[in-house]
Image 1 (cartoon, rainbow, N blue to C red):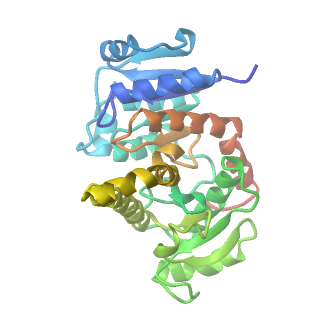
Image 2 (tube, rainbow, N blue to C red):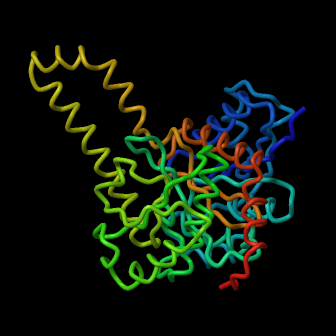
Length: 340
């Protein structure tokens, strides 16, 4: 019998809580007998959602909480003052070893602050980056960092590249992930001071397959498997991806409905188009893990629906089964980099 992976789900975080987190988590538990779900939040509200679902009662339980951290609250203050919030209690369960992973679509700032303050960084990690999988023409690629470490230094980006490469090997099954440095040009001398200082360090790093600088227009094409950048640029890229995708779909639907001829054409291409668009559906890839912590913390979009929660829990299962944290720790212990 496979080892059970205990995953805490913040049932009160996000735009569609508690309905979508509960539905998605239950679906994951129904699919995988190795998943145990622990909901944190308003017990009455969670039970109301569960009452309409079929689920394995021996692998789904609730840890009641009385507070919720709202998106607009100052993250650090909220973590310090709302000790009985669904988010803080969930992170504490991971810290105490009573759970293996934590998933939330609540306040990004609170998840990042709480992850590092409560779960804590693993030994040797200088900065813990947020690393979502993004859809590209060649499959899923890792964007690291997309929001956790603004004003990172060159040595931080090198560590991002190494742990991002390990993640893609262990979770995505790539033998030799291609690592690119996000820059404004392909030439080695291009970019700001951070990129110029980071490039030679990545080039000399024997633990990754570095392919050089990568421009933003190359990211959707999937020229690399790991895109390394600091949080400010990474977050802009991620939000631009989401925005362009949404506008493109809206405009395409509008064009197909603009005339009788376009409606007929739309019906003809719909099956092929639907299959193609599946590749670019970010919800298929789950949430963004905060890599380099002593336990697994994953942030999903604030607007996440059940499907994304389901895939995020399945992602957590694979992360734990492959012992990604253990492999990152083992690698770091073989190095002598100072902690930040």
